Amino acid sequence: MTGDIQEDDARKQRIGLPEAVFCAGKSVTQITRIAESRGDAPGFFTRLSEQQYASLPAGLRERLDYDPISRTAFLGSVDTPTAAPQIAIVAAGTSDLPVIAEIERTLTFHGAGSARFADVGVAGLWRLIDRREALDTFPVLIAVAGMEGALFSVLGGLVGGLVIAVPTSVGYGVSAQGRVALDSALASCAPGVVTVNIDNGYGGACAALRVLRAQSRLP
Image 1 (cartoon, rainbow, N blue to C red):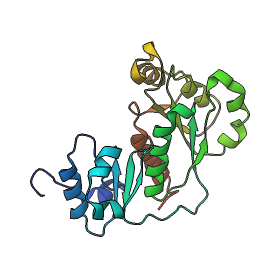
Image 2 (image 1 turned 60 degrees about the vertical axis):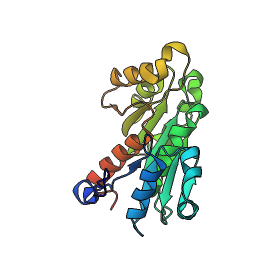
Image 3 (image 1 turned 30 degrees about the vertical axis):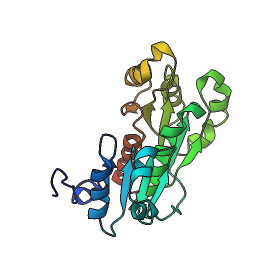
Image 4 (image 1 turned 135 degrees about the vertical axis):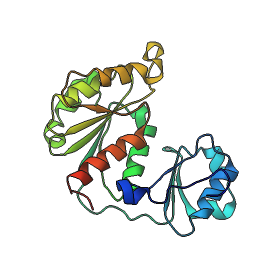
């Protein structure tokens, strides 16, 4: 513990997933202290804005693999997943890309690959139907959608794998910054669809990792 920072070093031993650093609301000084306290240990930073990243000390920026779309950064080297992906990311539209990218980067940091099926929203239902056989081969599917969130129930009624719904804040007016999609996911008539919070790609990815590790599919 250093001042107002207390890292949870034993989290991976308890739950199988190491602590990530949520950067929104943190000062550049706090982020720097956390990164420096890790030494050579790998780290994962989420919701790291471009402004925050640009304000970090040059030496630290050189050590970070930063992705501005997902607003995530890897500290230290991360191995590229080599096993066939067991997680599908099914996204309604390309406007959901920041959340999709956060999911992919989270999975990559934890050594898991994924397959992306993008722009398969139900407004063009044929796009999803054409991919049904391929989607049905995945044990876990992370569905990403905003607007009215119809993708969650439709996908949940088409495939046998676990569907994890990630509602996004994409949408006009009454979509209410993702609240309608969240309510749609929670009220889904497709049995067994589970839901994380609005725009929480990190949480959706971690849910998928927990499921697969519980099935001993991942180390």
